[in-house]
Length: 357
Image 1 (tube, rainbow, N blue to C red):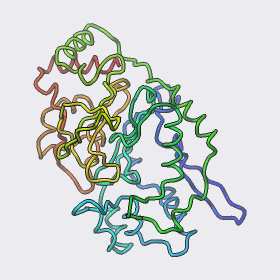
Image 2 (image 1 turned 180 degrees about the vertical axis):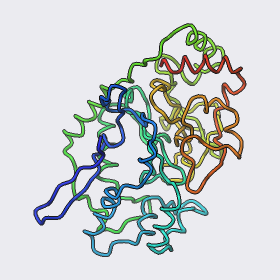
Image 3 (image 1 turned 135 degrees about the vertical axis):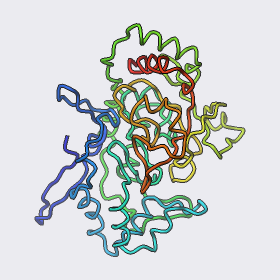
Image 4 (image 1 turned 90 degrees about the vertical axis):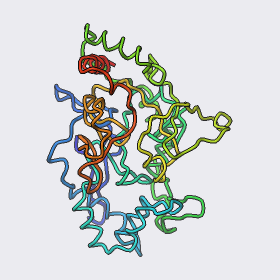
């Protein structure tokens, strides 16, 4: 699917925008049909890694319409800067010239297809495109549980915020000028609620992988290893939160309406502590639909289940098979050591079971 839409306005000017949800949340099936809702889904192709000139035009379109548009560095900082975090790695871009910023972007792979340096996130702590199928069964939205998910109206409100109304104001920190904070367009509430009802109707795609003897053995291993404590059937998540390393939850989490697990899995804390999406927590993901996701871990650092269960990913000289990070060649992918001590045959069986979910 082509992820952009265009129109020529009354003055003859070309206007470009992303095709909203379907630009990211889709999967091309083996028969060439398109399934809407999945996350990364299809493996990245080499030709997808080149920055699109259409996308570059879209990024500059809004700025050209506003007097006193910010520099490339100021724009970068408005998207990602975290002024309340000490030694914010994004701060250096404010002083960069446009040329320096463009050279940095061209020399650093910041996104891998299936991942996205979202506004309020970071190219240094990217996020994997979320799988919308089965979202009605999840208690929180975003990898860091920035929003609760109680009913379709929560999906509608979330969509309105991120698509139209995010004004980049965080307490005393205003990261956009008043002119750039004006909401110029917004979909009707009725349309957003209808979209939310549609998203709530989506269930994970049925797996083509057979539940054979190998998968049955993998299910027994899954249960014996205690995986069901966090990935509880039939949703294969307990819908709880886990605290990121370096964050201590307050004692009144229950009063705050948060369901926090006592477990710690050592997940990389970058997104949870060093971005504007930082809550200190990661949500425990559902394992349903693992077979089609293509990228694993909240940042999409690992491209296969085989890599995920390989203890080598914990070493600093590991080469991530998925997203690596700007200018990064090698790094550890920490967190979730469960299953690392299994024999090769047991891992094969466990993976066979996981691919049936």
